[in-house]
Image (cartoon, rainbow, N blue to C red):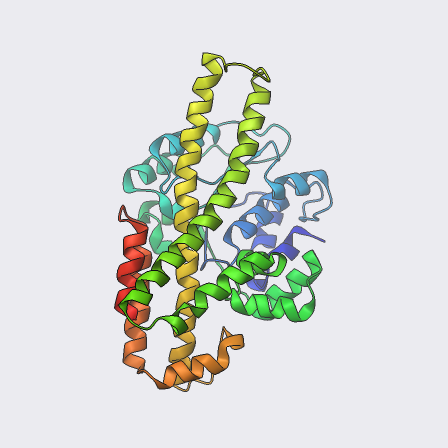
Length: 375
């Protein structure tokens, strides 16, 4: 199985990247763009693996391919910020790292996910490294759209535009990679709106499917302001519980690894030098937990939007297949008791709430205001 098999439903992109991997002098900077779930970072990792492949093809079997795609290759830096924004300090560290010569391969490859999370000042720092990189360095940036990246960076990158893969493509991947039954794979692909990561989670974890079902069913039980506020509280609590469970598992593992690496005693007080490292780790974990919670809240709002999208589809008689087919009867009933104008208004309210929770507003208050507005 080659690294290109991981790039789902993107035949034109795969062809473009395969040509680049065979080029003896590939473009020094690339910008991978596409909607969430389209596989931006996967395509970037596939290109990195192919450029470092021992056979020059991205075979997926050699040591270089496996480690480059996994992000453990000595010449691949795969950066994912744990903060709401990429800081200037992080950008400077990347620019310095990009100056290093490759240690085992032909290229030093810098993969930067969420390049849209850079402010203008941070982008200007990154620009210095992208404008005139060393001849052995290749930058691979990922963002939702070209407009999310500073124009001076965008103009210096070769674009790679990904699309949303088809449900059939996502389902085939779930069957091949995880052995998911075909019918379940198709259903999860549809429920995730072809987001590979979300589809995988829904296919493998029953509790994820249960939480999603509860989220999309909320509008069916909201009658009056009191129930709307209770629904907002329940939605917020679901997101907090899921994000907390995700963060705690990673936090405990990281703490244990740090203590072991620094030779901390198994019992007794932690030495001051180690305590300082622990404090820095805990501060980083706290910032990451906030991002995980925000991302989880956002995903729940996307799930909620699919309910109203289905309602609107019924009201406008578009003939489009429902995302939530398992709620088909309830959705048709709901659609007859309201208008398309009201449904569009509710979708706009949810979109505005998605924007607000990425600022400093209280997520719970934002959810309550949203639920009251769409009741």
